[in-house]
Length: 106
DNA sequence: ATCGTGACGAACG
DNA sequence: CCGTTCGCCACGA
Image (cartoon, rainbow, N blue to C red; front, side):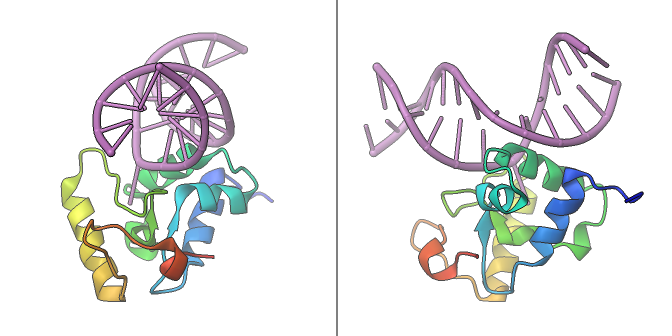
C-alpha cells in the first residue's frame, strides 16, 4: 500500500470504530492493533491527532485504564472531553470514572 | 542509526 | 492506601 500504513492511521481507524455511548482505553486499542504493549504509542498517536483531523475522530471515547481522563497539561481538552462523553450518554461515577463493565468497548 | 519523549500500564515498596 | 519505578512501543530531530 502506498498509503501511510503508519501505526497512527490504524489507531485512528480503530478509534472511529468505537460506537457512541461506549469508551475504551489505550491498552485495548493497542491490543486490537496487535501490540498490547503499545499503549503509549496509541496515546502518542492521539496526541499527534490534535494537529491533524481532530474533529473527525472520536478521540474523546478513549480514556486510560482507570476509566478516567489522563491528560497531562491540557485541562481544557480534558474538561471538553468529559462534556462530550456526558452528551453521548456516558455515565461517570462519583469519582468521575467510567465503568468498563457496562460502557467499555469492545 | 541513536536519543529523547509521550493522552499508558502494571508492578513494587 | 499512595507515590514511585520500570517497561513497553512508535515517532521526530
